Figure 1: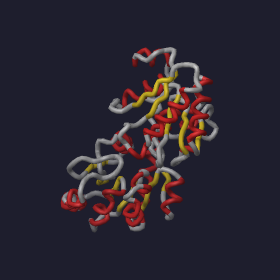
Figure 2 (figure 1 turned 90 degrees about the vertical axis):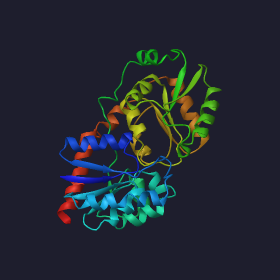
Figure 3 (figure 1 turned 90 degrees about the horizontal axis):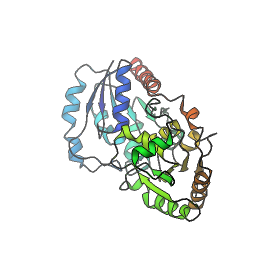
Figure 4 (figure 1 turned 135 degrees about the horizontal axis):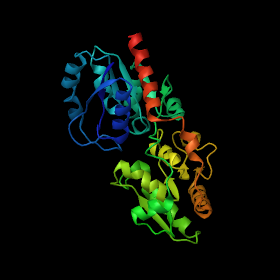
Length: 309
């Protein structure tokens, strides 16, 4: 099976890991993306930058591919504009809930199949969609000795550590809210409380941060199916999160962890986790989401689309 894949940023860790998993299960993938910089909060390129990619898309689509997979709404119009191959559209979250939402919905109605990250996204889309979140590398993200992880990072062994899993610059992740929550929790916790981010940290090192931390704090305005929550669960790191994407589903039965509606609930949940100082039982909640299994499910979507073309 040969798939032509269009994506705003081929450097995305989630994208590159899914492509690697697809190739392990027999899908040959070729990636095309627009020139220029891409912001994870939304496209920073002009319409012309995207239009300039179309001749390459058209030429490639005539080169024996079975289908075109548009990964995120920003590139969906390019996929649909080529006239020869069926189109699978994947929506990740911001492309549905953010400023590209109208474009993503319009394209979803015209694609052969749509893949979303969570049931909430499927409800928001209002049309048929496959709910297929990204999988987790359960070997890379696994519980490890907390003291050893802290020593590796040079963290104070006696302080509590709260991990914010994104760059401070990503507005949709709402770092200022997270900083307020940690400041309020710090007033109620006897130990010193560190506030750490993984901005600029290589993905291979993130598991060390998760094993060193006491809690993951997620304050996003919206999400699809945040990989960072699933990775934290795989490390048994307690999670305190806003009610976004599929977080409620992922944290069902996980303790200690909290899904919150308000700042007060976020502070109370974080204080509870830090005072208890325990690991969660989260790994059991993600055992059904290994990367290769999710890739096989996506391949099955491809096969259905090809058979119906």
